[in-house]
Amino acid sequence: MDFLAVGDIVIDDFIRLKDAHVTCRIDNTACEICMRWGDKIPFEFATTVPAVGNAANASVAAARLGLSSALRAYVGADSHGQECIAQLMREKVDATFVEAQAGKKTNYHYVLWFLSQRTILVKHEAFDYALPALPEGPKWLYLSSLGENSLPYHHMWAEQLKRWPGTKLAFQPGTYQMQFGTDALKDIYARADIVFCNKEEAQKILGMAEGSDMQVLLAGMQALGPKVVLITDDTRGAYCADSAGNRWHVPRYPDPREPYEITGAGDAHASGTVAALALGLPLEQALLWGAANASAVLQKVGAQEGLLTRAQLEAAVANPPAPFALEKL
Image (cartoon, rainbow, N blue to C red; front, top):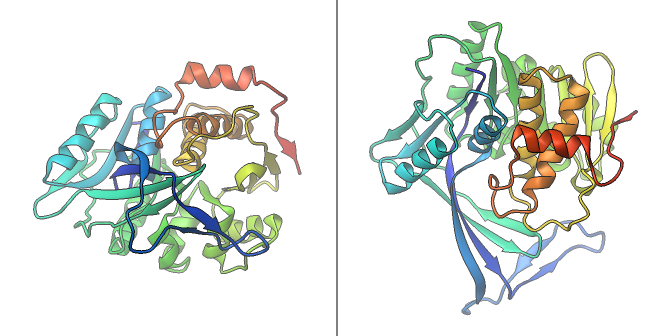
């Protein structure tokens, strides 16, 4: 197996709002979406996207790029769970390790989509997490967002990885993983070959203030032990540091189109980068693949429809609409 993603799977229900407004501080931070209190709020349309979530998105991205990809996740013993498994199978993701648990409900989130941004109402089911029975380790393990009760599950994976010295680890921490703190997950951070997060998440992980310097954030994340750190920074692209002392600015892919819907762009960036590494590409090339994959996702609704195939991604990187290259820092 080339790629095993581990994390919660969810159905996203997108609701396109048209009657709302956004308020921010004078420095354009701490923005909030506002709607009339106690009223009926019209919306443009709604659409449902099954089998998503950081890990599920990564498993689909890897499969689209030609890797043998599987997902370890949990669903409820319900129609939503069946829908998620069927969708993974359509995407050629091995769903053998997706377990339906009796008495549990499949995760279902609501995405309030206004302008180009989204606010997500989330609820993670408390699944009974356990390691799957695997005869051998995958080439890459991609660990991402899990529920509030999942801390022991992380320790299980940390111990399992000791028995799989040849397996590389990618870690994309989610909400509860950030809340657990770096000390609780120190074995995961230290074992990771690459860690992904955005700037705001890096600040939360490290306990630093908003507006912290990117170079300081890179150094702080590196101090946790991973070999490579990639921090995305919205329209400013991403920044990467490796254990050899190299640092790069990864530009945003120069797509002249405005983003349509941004859900899953970070997942596409991270999983595109890891998939490229799993295919044997050098880190510098893998970083460009990740950025191009993220750009494609911005043009579709949901986290997976825009994910590129290998041929599409190779063409996008080889023939960008404008200069597209790493900047060595």
